[in-house]
Image 1 (tube, helix red, strand yellow):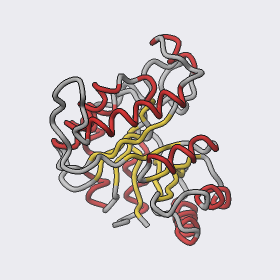
Image 2 (cartoon, one colour):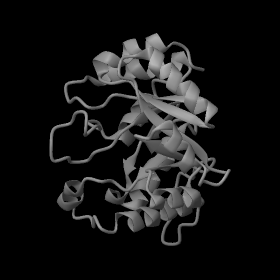
Image 3 (cartoon, helix red, strand yellow):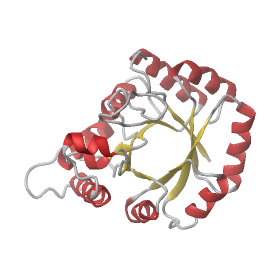
Image 4 (cartoon, rainbow, N blue to C red):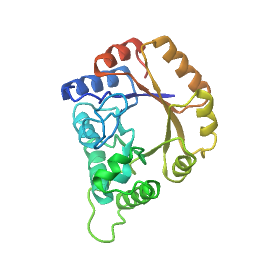
Length: 251
């Protein structure tokens, strides 16, 4: 079972150097993937509810230059707020610059305010996400019909679908290499994962709230239930380094 790290990105006061330090620490400890959240224009200050102070694609490109092996992903990008051709260009470029370490995590979003302020249709966000993923995949395959798309990724950029609804599971079955659940009990995770085809890796996220023994026990439980990967969120920038160190090497 792969163990990933969700980087803290909830405080505007956090210097970018701290993100680099935590990224390198996670890589040295053997984590498989670094994940960054995404909120474009939340109605309230960034914090526990809204993470994503730094735009994730640009930030992951920065972290790619400071790491060499660990994967880099969005957990998750609010996809229906993005223009698909630009997103395809950004993600193909990030894949090339990182040495094919980039993973595109997609989600439909839940904060209506963010849709309203950019003029996006909140009610069609699920359908729009499907349209964007299909367009990005087609462009990455070199199937542009109205222009020249470059750079083409050396291999398809992996898609991770986040969400726990029936629609999210259908989207994962149709498009995803991985599915990522969040806020689930181990038993509910296993029930939802069982609905996916074998070609989709079932993964989830958990919170490290300061008790490392409980985190280890939960990781063992999820491993026994067949989780392909677990992403651990380590709290704030001040807490994350010590908690990662306490959990120890996971590779």
